[in-house]
Amino acid sequence: QSALTQPRSVSGSPGQSVTISCTGTSSDVGVYNYVSWYQQHPGKAPKYMIYDVNKRPSGVPDRFSGSKSGNTASLTISGLQAEDEADYYCCSYAGSLYVFGTGTKVTVL
Amino acid sequence: QVQLVESGGGLVKPGGSLRLSCAASGFTFSDYYMSWIRQAPGKGLEWVSYISGSSITVKYADSVKGRFTISRDNAKNSLYLQINSLRAEDTAVYYCARVRFCCDFDIWGQGTMVTVSS
Image 1 (cartoon, rainbow over the protein chains, first blue to last red):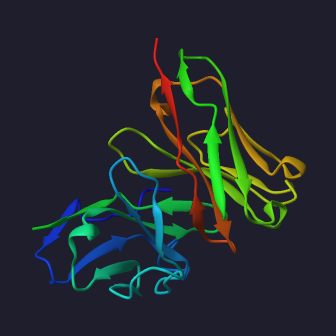
Image 2 (spheres, chains in turn blue, purple):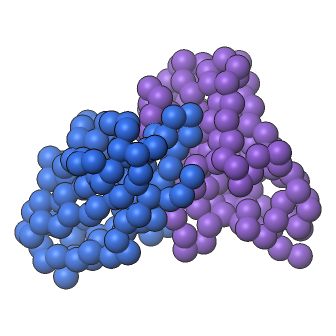
């Protein structure tokens, strides 16, 4: 199972919106509505940000939203803040196994 | 509070073995599937293995099949990963994570570093 494809980096100014894509196949993203997203600051463990494509766990700001179309899922960060600068990883359930994305570095300019 | 704490990492020679542990607290451990996920230095996340609450179901990534063994002791609220025949490419931070429902990882430990080098 190959890793899901994410852009290496995206950037935006404070207050702007950025969107990170996550492209898989008809064996993972395309067939299961079990896409999740994780935020990782340097030297820290990943943090659970989005599950089931577009649901937010308790405590995650509503600036973070998820969506999916076909084989591509997306994470949008609205009203970008300095503390959003981090690496972001998508993950898809693929029927008894899991596939992570290649990761995207978000830079706040 | 809900917490996972890994231990057991270290420096090991190629071909060696190591047993990682993950202590869980703050939730009913036996109710949940648990998983190991690793991250090589400067690289992305890679799912390694999972185990059901009853230990009946286990699954491994192809990259570790036959060399890694996941297990758990529900009486001790602990998850384990036995890693054998270690290779340089196994060098990574190993995270334990709680599996939510089927399908994602809602609680993560802080990770334990495994370095394979002669």
